Image (cartoon, rainbow, N blue to C red; front, top):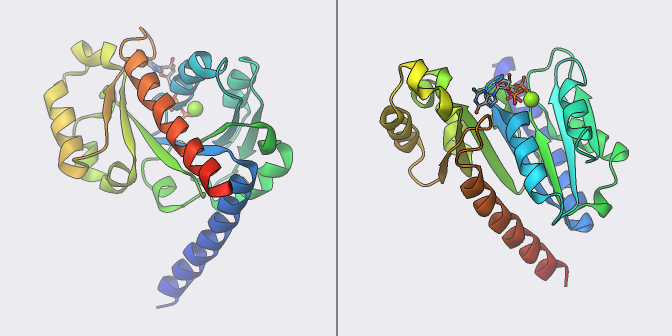
Length: 226
Ligand SMILES: Nc1nc2c(ncn2[C@@H]2O[C@H](COP(=O)(O)OP(=O)(O)OP(=O)(O)O)[C@@H](O)[C@H]2O)c(=O)[nH]1
Ligand SMILES: [Mg+2]
């Protein structure tokens, strides 16, 4: 009984903080994207490819979530993009309050796009609304084809699935059709982009879709602010 009310309190407080973030993002006129995946699926690699493709067109900032180290933030900063690291210690996801606190370290008014890389974890990040506009999930071919069945929440709640590491398909013993069909069983609608951040295959298709979605979000925000 106590567990249930505690969980309700935590999620209620998070929703409040997420709404607060949403107001800050709207005021700043910035589109916000939450990247989620299991550890090592390729979030930072996809971010690097995305930043390289889009940094000439829009002002991008990044919030990195990790238990320890600034390794990912350093990788992003090396691309000349402002990056702020949230180190969560033992917490296995970002929550809206952590993102709120990090906004003191990042000038979002000067940004068109803010990308938040969540902590690598296939479960908890999906439960915590950060106030974002768009959710992108990275699923890699080496994780096994059954993951959408076993961890359906993140697959269900995402706006797009990037199926990374397709260069490793010949070695992983998993069929592309099985990966694809299992994603589709849980989420029939989200666009699915087979890519390799290593070889660059499929990246152009991903970038084209992402660019269009960010444009739509920003136009909608501008219209609401007018
Ligand atoms: N072969 C291959 N390796 C990849 C690909 N994408 C990423 N990697 C490698 O996979 C490892 C993890 O990639 P990251 O981008 O750091 O993954 P991540 O999801 O950001 O990891 P965490 O932040 O620790 O959860 C690195 O060694 C990458 O070089 C790919 O498409 N093919
Ligand atoms: Mg990373």
